[in-house]
Length: 208
Image (cartoon, rainbow, N blue to C red; front, top):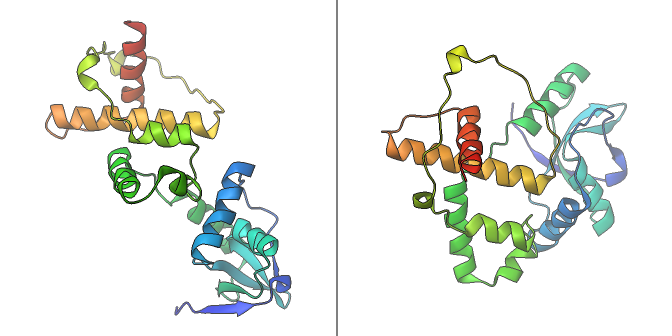
């Protein structure tokens, strides 16, 4: 399938009713800032529906286009695909974007901050100043004692589910990634799971 960018009136594009991806006000403002700074560089993915176009991916960009007066809007249209296929694509595109490696992200942010002011970066990047500073601050692993280990084969497994603010979730993800990278460095690229990394973090805290 050859995917072609075309421009259509925004009024002919409509959101789908199943999109699970929600943006808070802070991230939406960053979406607006990004489009102002760089233009509409990521077309909306759509399908044909009733003579118009239904969004598969890009509802927030479509909303931002309306607020910024961008019309017509760039789309990539997949044509006549079923609702089931469209729903699956929405999930796939939301869930497979990946997660930044903290070390590589830190290097990238440090490079950018050497070229321009932190404030100019914060104008478009999706971080508060506190989040930005936490991302570029190195972690002193030498000050952390080795945590106690559990025997997973003799442990009863439980499922825990927590709802976290985005900033807290980002800090937890960063901590898990740092533990995993440290273990790979110290033990010959041996990987540990997320739950093992959390065990290390909690054990370190309890040992204080």
